[in-house]
Amino acid sequence: MTAPAQSLATAAEAGTGGILLWVVLPYVALAVFVLGHVWRYRYDKFGWTTRSSQLYERRLLRIGSPLFHFGILVVLLGHIGGLVVPRSWTEAVGIGEHTYHVGAVVLGTVAGVATLGGLAILIYRRRTVGPVFSATTRNDKAMYVLLTVTIVLGLSATVAANAVGGGYDYRETISPWFRGIFRLQPEPGLMTGAPVLFRLHAISALLLFAAWPFTRLVHMLTAPLGYLTRPYIVYRSRDARLGTRAPRRGWERTR
Image (cartoon, rainbow, N blue to C red; front, side, top):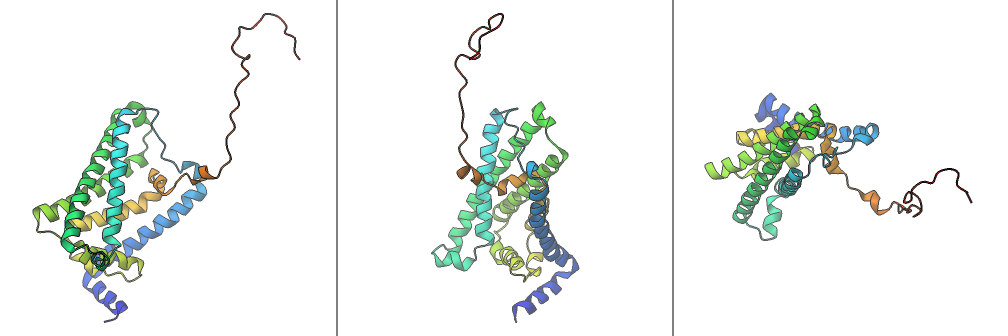
């Protein structure tokens, strides 16, 4: 069976609901993600920022921010490795299925716990520190809710499938479905048989990516590369005689 015919067959098996969730929603989320960032950059450059609240409170931020950011970086790399890299590639470099599975579960669980712990600290800080809470918008609150739900569902799916269940090989279903989206050969039938928590995690992730361009998360897609090429800023010291002596009464002679 050819690839297009196979895609049509899996689409028929998935039904209308499966097509909406695993074909339409991914493409809508992807389009909103790309076009939303273009729109945001063109019309809201000054809003392209994290709106840092470091001046208001530093103690909790010093703990929660690194914990969250390093954790989410490992989670992101793990998702790229699991969803984008086919099994044949890892086996070609000598990484067996059991080794990959154990490493992915252990590293993913540790990174997920770190990410969730850091996020909990940041949310606690934002709720309990007055000036930080005052600077929190409704957009921020919705973003935190969606981000928390996505992380919790992903961590729960990993733990439930491997600690409670007998393990689940998502590289047989979710990974081919994910790669098929970008090959324009979606196979929604692969997702209909995935565990519920994995499907909920995928849906929440798609919604998060659709909302991404309109939140402070846009800062994750930028880097201060301009600092490498911009000219030096010249600082000139004030004349030592100015501002260090008491003013005299009356007129002063000028040069």
